[in-house]
Image (cartoon, rainbow, N blue to C red; front, side, top):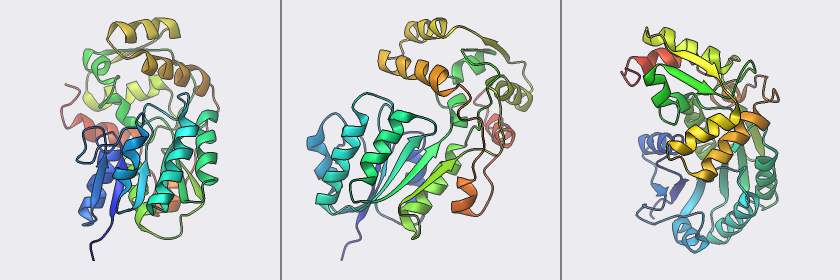
Length: 273
């Protein structure tokens, strides 16, 4: 009998590709859920959902562009319903910490009857080396609408380790794990840690959110992503997440990786040179 797949939605993204790597290392059959996948998956086309869920017993669910986007809760609820009809019971949702809109999606998932687990995550370390903050770091100066609010930055590798564990092990159904790093850093603190790790001078300037949005638009960032970033830097980065949680420790039995350790390892790759 053929072993069923684990569907990893967003399997080419920051966390998804890391989840794929971990499941593949365990010799578990994986199906990447993306528009360009062998079996295409598109959040905007529900007709693609059931084919992607065929012969799937568990799914890692990351919603694009973000659970804070309009329509996300309805989409998550509809996807969970489709998953259960397809025989996929275990659903692991990547969620945002401190986002009321994301919690509405979590509630849809919990009400579906699936064997669900929620991973609520803080800001990713990898935003500085795999996303929109890479170019400013390389250029030597970061301009953001963030000041003295602490954020418990979390490593995407920790998220993926947790996700792989809850997808494949018992004891995690009905649980919400809040995943954070081991300490709080402001955005200026984080940039200073990267500066120290690289041995380069990397400056930081706080700017008005509208100036930030204008620069993103000028750089060709899609309007919906710009609106999402404005929301994250204003509504969510208001101190509500200025606390630490031990979700990584609960699942993996080890502490979360510290930002400075991640920065040193990342600097050694040369990505910020």
